[in-house]
Image (cartoon, rainbow, N blue to C red; front, side):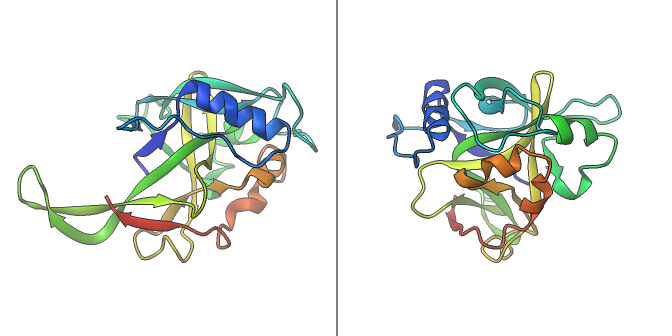
Length: 207
């Protein structure tokens, strides 16, 4: 399960929104500080949120149809300790997720995300003990990766799907990466057509 990613600033997310709404390919230059901010469950991060009900959707995204909102990563449920920070797209109709998945889908723009290998280990630099290795994933040639999420209140959860060929050697699940041109579909009633991410290319390097 994805539990770490590299986020953009609120102003950078606003710039991403402007480019989405005019239909321009992402062409902004992120403010790359020496050390980018990484988010973990319970971290706050800026997301791109539609101003409309995603159960209805829009054929085309227009100026003013999206906004940036900062939310905490992970749904809080009384029956679950900790937070639920990943949501399987296959579970969209279960009671916990149904309302949010139907009416409140969003995306989080990230520079990269991390996944823990199912079995590969290496020596921890802190303790020297063997720990499972993490890999950092990017989309080749893209500074911005959009990941599907769902939200309620001031919290969000990252949507995951079955791993594609690039992710499968590391983990059996992957974040639901959404191409810029697929946003109207993700923000509309037929969003489950995006569950198959076999055509998404990913590149990975050990973290």
